[in-house]
Length: 144
Image (cartoon, rainbow, N blue to C red; front, side, top):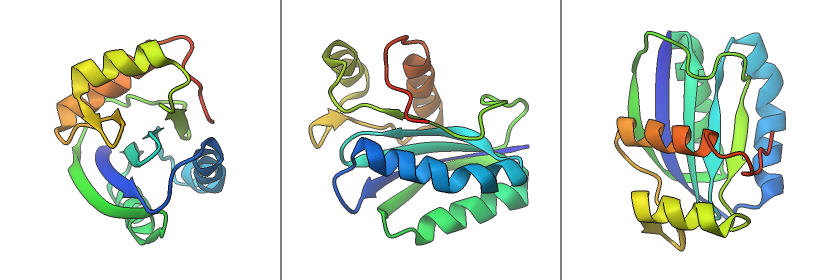
């Protein structure tokens, strides 16, 4: 099993519906290819963690790299992983769009700020820590 993490800047301002469209369009393909993961979004950036077989994860990332909604894609890590972090999740999406100001402020203090939103880390362990921090919150909108 392999895990890939990337960060990208959005070509346009990200809305909830943008994330929902991405999740809907990827759900069936991810299910067929046994891909799991999570997609985080602010109004300007994406951070995604993808898990699965080497070829499937690589092919998924190559499709994402060609997607015109993404620009300035930065590969954070791609390598073997011992355990699934998102087993049972075809793909989940979480938006940090200012609906939970307290959480957003906490995340900004911990991870920094970028373009008015939470800065998505470019180190794999910090990116996974951010995902974990968000998963622990009860009232953040799941956009899946």
